[in-house]
Length: 396
Ligand SMILES: Nc1ncnc2c1ncn2[C@@H]1O[C@H](COP(=O)(O)OP(=O)(O)OP(=O)(O)O)[C@@H](O)[C@H]1O
Ligand SMILES: O=P(O)(O)OC[C@H]1O[C@H](OP(=O)(O)OP(=O)(O)O)[C@H](O)[C@@H]1O
Ligand SMILES: [Mg+2]
Image (cartoon, rainbow, N blue to C red; front, side, top):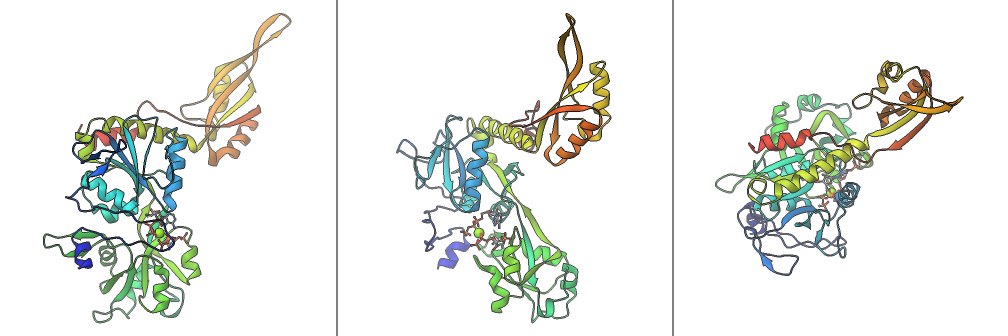
C-alpha cells in the first residue's frame, strides 16, 4: 500500500533517527494543504495574499542559502531554528517557508509556494520536466555537484575507465544486465500511474548500454557494489571522497547531470499572483549583482602621465586591465610653485579575482604604483540578462 501511495504522488515520510524531524507533507500536484499563515490563520493556496519562498530546511544547502541571501542584504529573520516560517524584512509581503528540497519542488507545482531555491538535481528529479517550473537563476554558485556513474576500481572493472568501455563489456546480457543502484529515478507517472524510470536509463541507452537494470535506494549507495547488490551506482559526487573511500571511480563520459543551487519559480504564480514578478525581479537583480561582484576586485592605482587619454591608452594596451567597460582615469591634482597641475592620474578598474596577480604585474609594467585592492559588493548592470530571458519565457 505504501508503495502504491508513493507511486501515485503521495510520498510518505517517516522520521529518521538522528536527523531533524520530518515534516508532514501534502505532495500531490493536485492537492494543496491548508496552511497556517504568519498571522495564525489557516489559508488556502488560492486565497493567500502573501508571496511564498521555499528554502531548504536542512542538509548541506540550507546554511549556504541563508548566507547567500544575507550577502544580498536579504537576511532571513527566523524567530527560532525549529520554526519553519520566517521573513525577509527587506521584501514586504514575502514569507519564507523552510522545507526539504524535494518538497520545495512539489509545492511549487501544487501552488503552495511561488519561489524556491533548490539544487538543479532535485529540480530535474522531482520537477519531471513540468513546464510550470521556471528556472530564474540557474547558477547560484554553491551546492555544486554532479550526478555521475561510478564503478568499482577492482575486479572486472579494473581497466574500465569510460562509459564506452563499460558499454563494450561482454558481461552485460539480457539475462544478466548491468545493475545500477541510484536514488535518482526521475519518476514520471503515466496515465495508469505506472512508474517510468527515465533519466538514468535514457542516458545509458543513449550511450550504448543496452542491458541495464536500475534499483533504488535512498542513501549510502556507495556501499552497494561491495555488498554485491549492484555493479555500478548513479549518485551525486562533489569532492569524490565518498567514492574513493569505497573503492569506486567515476568514468569518462559518465556525468548525467551537473548541478548547483538555482532560483526557481512557478509560472502560474509569476503570471497570476500579485507581486510575484516584482519580487522575483528584485531578488534576481540582487543575486545577479552580488554574484557578478563576487568574482571581481576593484583595483585603484596611481600612474604618472601627460594626459588622461595617454594613461588610458597605456592601461588598455594590457589584456588584463580593460575592466568591465574600460578604465576610469581621473587626474590627481597637486600644487607646485603656486600652480595646480596633474602629473599623476588615478585609475580604477575591476579585475577578475582569478586574474588579480597578472593584473598587478601588468599595472606595474606600465608604471602603476600605490595599488589598492578592495572587494566589490554589487555590480548592477542596466538590466540583468536573466530578467529579459524570464520575460521571454513568460511570453511578456
Ligand atoms: N556531496 C555534495 N556536495 C555538494 N552538494 C551536494 C552534495 N550532495 C548533494 N548536494 C546538493 O545538496 C542538495 C541537498 O543534499 P542533502 O544531502 O543535504 O540532502 P538530501 O540528500 O536530499 O537529504 P537526505 O540525504 O537527508 O535524504 C542536493 O540535492 C544537491 O543539490
Ligand atoms: O563527493 P563527496 O564530496 O564525497 O560527496 C558525495 C556524497 O554526498 C552525498 O551524500 P550525503 O552526504 O548527502 O549523504 P546521503 O547519502 O545520506 O544523502 C552523495 O549522495 C554522496 O554520497
Ligand atoms: Mg544527501
